[in-house]
Each structure stands twice: as C-alpha cells, then as structure tokens.
Amino acid sequence: MAISELQLPPGVRACPHDAAGPMAQALAVRVADALREAIANRGQVTLVVSGGRSPVPFFEALAQQDLPWAQVRVSLADERWVPVNHAASNEALVRRHLLRGPAAEARFLSLYQVAGNLEQAAELADAAVAELAPIDVLVLGMGYDGHTASLFPNSPNLSQALQPGCARRVLPMLAPSEPAQRLSLTLPVLASARLPLLAIQGQVKLNILNAALQPGEITELPIRAFLHSPLEIHWCL
Image 1 (cartoon, rainbow, N blue to C red):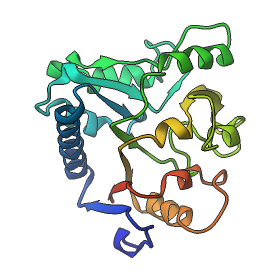
Image 2 (cartoon, helix red, strand yellow; image 1 turned 90 degrees about the vertical axis):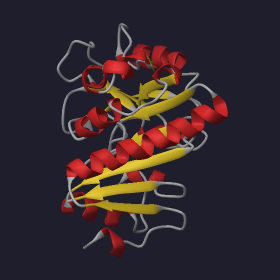
Image 3 (cartoon, rainbow, N blue to C red; image 1 turned 120 degrees about the horizontal axis):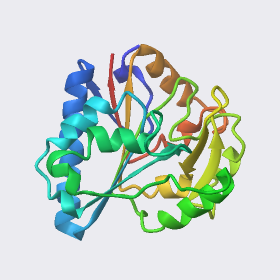
C-alpha cells in the first residue's frame, strides 16, 4: 500500500518522501516556513514537538533553519517523568539535537517537574504550560500501537485525556509496554494547533495509519483523534 491509496478525510494532506533524510529536511523547511509566517502575524510563536529517536534528523535539520529563534517557544507533546539528565528524557533529546547553535535562543517550556508523585508532577506541568495554547506548529509521531504523544491504548486517564472538553492540559499517563511514568498534553491542547503535522516512517506504520482511518473507537488507536483537517501527514519508507 502507498500513502496515495489511503482514504484520507477531507482537508488532510499526504506528503510522501523518498527516504528518512529527505523527509526530515522537507519537514524542517515546512515547519520553519510556518513559524516565519506565524512570527510575522503574531510575534511570539509556539512549536510543540514529540520525543523518541525518529525525530532526531528532523530536529537537527530544523536547528539549521534561519529563524528569529528568540521569538520561538518550544515544548513537548509528552515527557517521561525522569530528570532532564536521564537518558530517556525527551527534553534532553530536544536540547541536544534542536536547541543548539542559533536555535539555542528559543525559549523551552519543560513538562518535567520535580514532585512527590506523578499526579503532583502533572498538576505542576499543567500550570507551567498554561501559555502554550493555541499552538502554532505541532509535530506528532505515532507508535506501533497507534499512540501519539503519550496517549497510549489501555493507559489510565486515556479516556479523560481524549475528551474534547477535558479541563486538564496535562495528565499522568502510563505506557503499558514499559514501566516509565509519563506526562502528556491532552487532546484540547494538542487540537489547538494551527498547523498539526504527523511524521511516520515505514510500511508497518502506514498500515497502522490505514487501520486508524477505518471506523473504530478512538481509545483503541488514539491517533484517530487527530486524523482530520488541517493535518499534514509526512511519510517515507
């Protein structure tokens, strides 16, 4: 199956690329162009990205883009509840691969909070990210179980986090396949993005995306909550 064969909802754009390197570069250019336009219109802008290993080439390509980085606020769609010096920290990943050189002038809003437990950390993070919405550019990924951000199937709080009227900006989440405790932005915050982009690689994830485009419960494949206009899907083998 090719991405052109997917039955995409009206207003959702598919952007296929030949390989991971060209996709990372094209995605960086797309994001930088959108940020420049937003800066021209609104001054300060917000970019929210996802963690994991896949975005690293995109981060490095975006860091080389010519932008007024001091006017860009950067944050994460989700975070593991681990200190910033931990190997699994998404914040550490972003600081290492994106916020370097001229891009180090961007302001970073952290989801990680020191607290007695995960719920307290989520409450502190909720207050910290109050200024995020609306997001100017959001870059999401997708896991093999159809999760995005840390909105995992079968995770406690998932149904609440996916409610369009959820009053919380950040909720504690768990990845059922690993013990790491997580923090995730909720649907209303993520859905506020003026330009949401989804970046995926490989035929397996394309097949999962196709399954998510079929009718079904959002909690089974949480990426379903985002498969509507004006989403752009960037994909490569």
